[in-house]
Length: 311
Image (cartoon, rainbow, N blue to C red; front, top):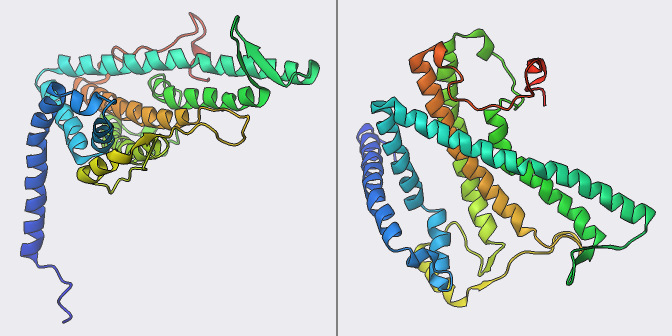
């Protein structure tokens, strides 16, 4: 009776073997799933069909989607290991994407400040209860709507500029051993961090954020435990129920945007984890002379180097 909960060595090996076979099978099947999804877009992109919406919801947080991304990552990695130019190309594209998105949405910080100033003037000096923007049929909302919208600007900066800040080296770091080790050791630490911290954290956040988003967009609310067949059954009663109101009836009416930004943030972090992994590997392989190769960082101009990175 006391040995019922004990797993034998043979059972352990069998379980590990089954897991490896399952991973290999799912990885191989991922290529078929990618091809099928690309050649049958109507099954998951035709949102006039409620079943297509439910398929999109299911596969966005599914094992199939994970292995599809993993398969593409595997192909890029193998190709990059064979030809380093491929890997450098991926690094430049992903870092350029992070820089482009970040530089664009960093302007939301300026909009946030300007809008706050306008709100203060209209509310305290002109005692206006609302703000009207535009000609003909103006956009008119209560001041509390615009005040709560400031959170959206802040969320845009946080969610969409995080990887841009990473590329620019602007994140605050707690350095315990990093600065004291050799160059190649630093790159090994960077690769370890990308694989075992950045990627898993992004995947877990995506899994929670994906269903968190859709539970505020449609009813019946989908669950991570729902099978595809169950979601297809739910599609008969599906209707859009987009979350609008947050804290007050007259407040900001686009709170679903914050959930979309959460998903976008995790996608950007995962993509940049790939770029950071590839860059760390290439710099480890090529040596110190390749440090910062193709790195596009902002500059304040000649003679201002001492102030760069302090923002």
